[in-house]
Length: 282
Image (tube, rainbow, N blue to C red; front, side, top):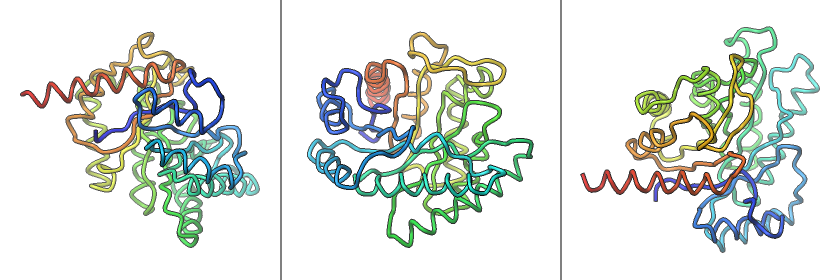
């Protein structure tokens, strides 16, 4: 299966609330990936990361990580920019030890600045982070995420431009965020295909073979994202999305962020396989 499906964090049905138990539960459920959530800080020690790596290898589960929320590479306070870079570095180092393929993060806020100004700042600061990791022979892919609020830097074009400019950087395309950001648009097969086509044209085979998505149901207002929802309680046309992903022949990972985590992850996987099976018979 070219796309691995998984959850944003330990599945809710996991009896023991640990990363290792979560990985084992992922395998029991028939999923193939898990995103380790460091959203409130990286509190995992190096020894624990190595133990997690062993479990993931044993269970054949692909790991990714989500860096802390407290990142703003466009802060007007230099100490906050440096702290943001350190959080990305810390996440990437622990991710490397646990064998994770990539780390996801929200890159910046606009403040009162133009998109082009923020883009240049983010590229500058993230290039420095990437350079340090390259010097450490850390190949973890850095993934700025498309964001769901209009105040957050990170629409599709901005995110693709960062990845185009910096080797070792690829987008995390959060389709639900884009759907919310544009107040209900980006919700049809053609619109989903347009997103995938833009990414493929901009980033080529490197992205096609290493795509990474976040998906959930989502509630939104005119200002963008409000909160995540269960897929069936939202207006996101996930069947059309799975059809688009399958039609592009992508390799990569789809991480579910719905409140019911594994239930919607399994629903997405089931839908994708049904689309794939139908396409194979045509």
